[in-house]
Image (cartoon, rainbow, N blue to C red; front, side, top):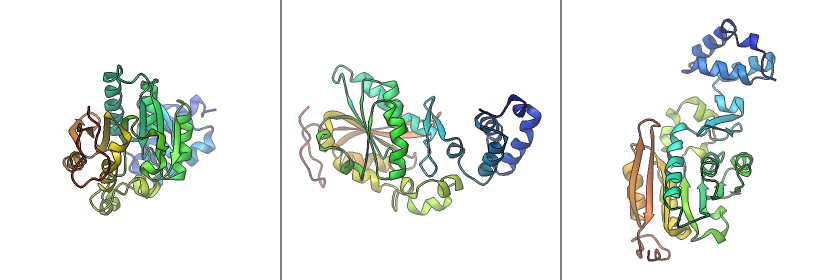
Length: 287
């Protein structure tokens, strides 16, 4: 059971808020209330506060993250879903709703799924979807299974498309990708919460941060329906280069940004009947 109501009284919260604020927690009041509400007893609460003060992400302490209005299980070491990534979910669901007459049971793939937050949120908002999620990190896959199983999806372990069943080739309507896009050198400037407590594999996007975007774009048309969609989260600063990579792989491209969420998504649709220069593989089927 959570700590009793007396512990949550303002005079009892005050020292926790002060301690968290001194440790650099920007949202100390909100975090203190969550820790008090979720801790099973006073001893656990004291331990949790110490962990938070040491820099452990709040979500790893609680065991869940708030994402698209739902709790997503998040294990220690697993990438914590960010609020900005909700834009990726909103864009995917909007396209699914628009294309509903074309695909009564659309196939959705959540690539580099981490905790499975993106795919799980899409499936909750669009239950008709057939969800497949994949990640290379065994810890992330184990965590994702708890979330994805709850919405009837499947999770696979492996490197990008190599993790997916071959039978999905040419059947995917939505390919949602939140691959690592932090430039290698920039990782050392990230907050300790991410740099020290999340898997480096979930952060490191290579020299310019776009290695995974190149790899995904190069193979995406092999997996998508001719009228499917590739959606890649990126940063505002990198969106032009991500869009160029996707366009160079044979897609029409648009970039979507949300000031409210501070999120940016590049959306690509396969060009009809064309194969991009420099990208091997089959021609995109005629639309």
